[in-house]
Image 1 (cartoon, rainbow, N blue to C red):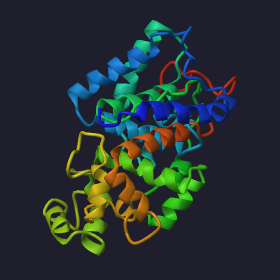
Image 2 (cartoon, one colour; image 1 turned 30 degrees about the horizontal axis):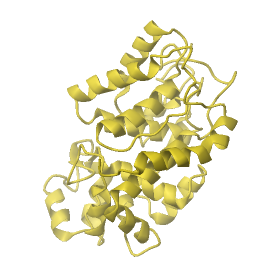
Image 3 (tube, helix red, strand yellow; image 1 turned 60 degrees about the horizontal axis):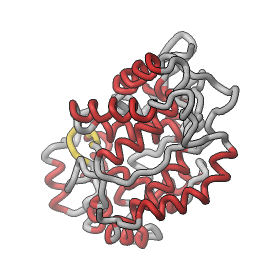
Image 4 (cartoon, rainbow, N blue to C red; image 1 turned 180 degrees about the vertical axis):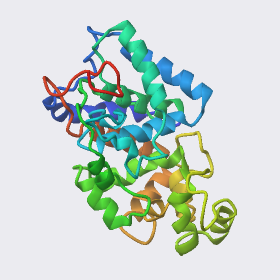
Length: 319
C-alpha cells in the first residue's frame, strides 16, 4: 500500500473527533446490536451497483455532499415531490444531475427486510460515500452513525447553499464556512472531483470565457460542448486522467490548468489555495488523510438524532 501510515494516522485523528461526534449521539457502533449486518448489506449493494454502472458510486458520493449542505445530513435530498413536499431533486444544482437514487432504494429495501425500521436513509448515504471512495481506491474511515431522517425537504435551501461550478474562491470559502467547514476542508473535499463526470452546462463558461485554462484543453472540450445546446449531455470526466480511480490526479490537473470546472481551477489561480493544491498534488497520502478527516466532519453537520425526525421506511417519502 502506498500510504503505509495512513490508517494509523486516521485512527489518531478520529480520537480527536470523538467528543464532537458523540456530542451529537453518532457512533460507529450504532447498529452493532440492532442491525449488525447493516454495513455489509450497504457495501454489497453498492458494489453490485458499481459493477453495473461504474460511475454511480461517484454520483452517490455527490448526493451525500448535497444532502449535508442543506439543513445537515438528514436524507432530505432523497424525498420525492408530493402534495406537501417540494423535492430538492428539482433544485438547480440537482435537477437532471443528482442521480443514483434507485441504488439507495434497493439497499434500503434489503435493510428493511433484514432489520425493519432500524437504519436511516441519511446513514445509508454516509456509508455509501465511504464505500464508494474505498471502491475507487481511496482512503477508508469509520462512519459515525445514528442520523435520523428529515420529514421535509428544502428546495430553496438547496438552491442557496449547494456550491455552484461558477463560484470563485471567495464564494467557495464563504459557502463552506457557512457549514462550519474550514478553508482546508473546502480544498480537500473538492478533491472528490477525482471521480465523476460533469455536464456541458457546468463547464461551458470556463472553456469559452476563462483565461486560466490550458488552451489546447479548452479547444478539445469545445469540440464536445457547443456554445449553445446540449446542456444536459454528460460529456467529460471531472478528472481527465483517471476517471474511476480516487487519487490525487485532480490536483495535478489543476497545476497545468486543466481543471474542468471554473470552481475547480479557482483552487489554483495565484491565490492562498495554491499551496494546498501543490501539497496534495505531490502527496497522495496527505490528501487521503485530510480527505478522510474532512468528510467525517462534513457528515457531522447538524444530524437529526434522538427523537428528532424519523427512520423512513421508504427513502422517497415520510412514513
